[in-house]
Image 1: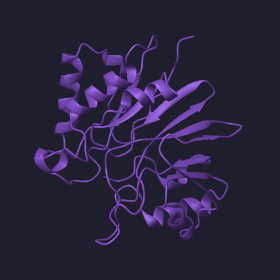
Image 2: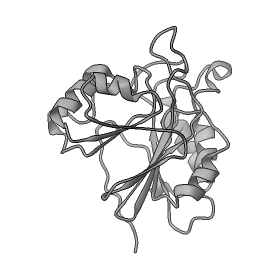
Image 3: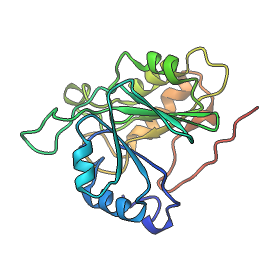
Image 4: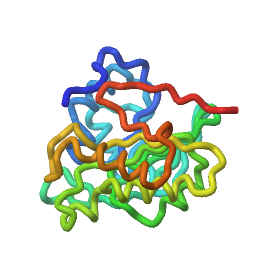
Length: 226
């Protein structure tokens, strides 16, 4: 699947969040191009990944451990736990950390789960950095389940994570379903994750207005009630 937005159409980039070092999530030529075009961008990455980013041209790089918060005049961001792994070769598995991220700016709070299986810390993340206006949760690349369940959520897991992240919140939490349809990596049909996620979302009695499963290249504006 081609990029939803052409590179030259991107706005100025202030912040780049890196979840881990797998090739389908951290493409070296893209890092080089972003670094050259947006040299003032701040790159936030998990522990022991900064050297690699700097070698590709990133100038402003901050490494974080889980639960570490970065404060800037314009936003704050927390590095959050994820259940996954890292590797770019057969000999470096686990040499760098993997994570999700929260971002709070202008009183809007967003959570990006990164690449992750279901884990027990979603409630703690919401308590530490929520309540969230938008959460981005992976829903694809999950079959065969015996092999993928420890590294990727399926739609059922994503619903469970959403309920933990939004539990007790007065505001409506939008869910942007991610990690599906870009690469054909696993055994499920490529169009199954969003369809299955929508069915489970409805079965859980959740509002259709907050299920943001977008077509590639689609955009929406997050409008918050005051």
